[in-house]
Length: 227
Image (cartoon, rainbow, N blue to C red; front, side, top):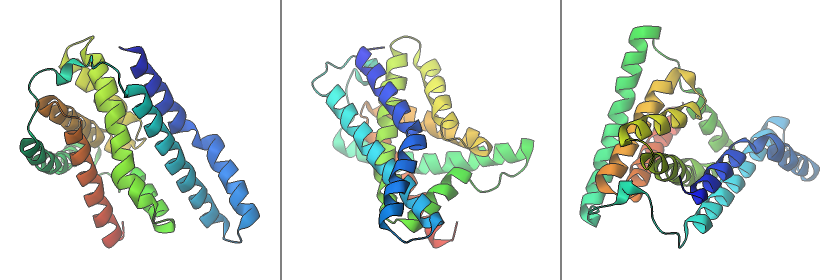
């Protein structure tokens, strides 16, 4: 795996766990300048730090990837046209939604119907406190995750092992890091579908687009239906 891929992975993991230090610092600053409740201050601190750290990680990833020769064999060959890519984004969104229902059904057969996704409900709670968080959930989050899990981890591993093994490993990591064990299978299938979209079209913008549509749809449903 190229060294610059490792730089992006390292940056992402630092960002992922940086809230342990960053959020309390932001909260202390807010507490000194605001009279809002502790609950609101805690939520705002998480939102502000999450957006800041994700944007910083995106900037670092862009700087690292800029002007680097492409060694990712996933994209070698003829790329899908713009029109075909758009169709795959829409079709990918439909497959992603269907895969979640399949995963929930399978999970229900073995361990019972899972309760609401703790990860999704947590994100919705932050979004209600600070609407700007909606932008992170629907756009910046999916873009960063596609760069890390599909382009870097999946693409990097595909140069070392067969693409099926690479897809399984990257999708499992994607599911595990969402921290929602009741929906582990759902996140795993989502990861596999996104790997397929990337492989099929050879354009990272396609899984990004499908991921953005999925998150936006779930966000709208969650906000309009109260959870």
